[in-house]
Length: 154
Image 1 (cartoon, rainbow, N blue to C red):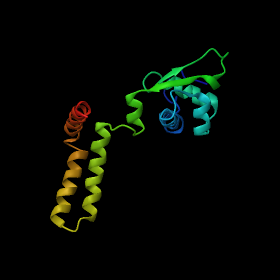
Image 2: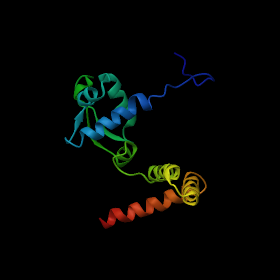
Image 3: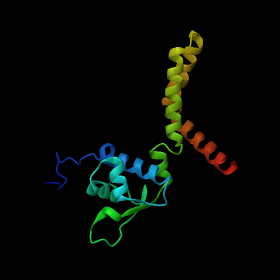
């Protein structure tokens, strides 16, 4: 078992295989319901009830509001009442400023590959490099400010 923090001990990465699919399912299922059970999520993801319950417990409260009902330890009827804005951003349902800038940088790079004008190709590659590098943090902050303002306007 180990786990006493000694060099060589490894903690298993569960994000891609467990947490992200569970979070994605919870966000999607909550579009059609006011709450979703561990059973609903297990059915959607194909994961075991115990894995879904462990995942939701690990993500509570950062991503989910996970409620454990008095069921004698049976997780089938435990449920997610709601997800957080961070959860919606993580699965791509809501825009996140950093993700937007990363997508813009990639899109400028792709546009450069197909533009017939060599000068514009150079400009597009330069824009991609700037957004992906030295001005990324400023661009993320600007995007966050614009997105926050537009949320109040709409």
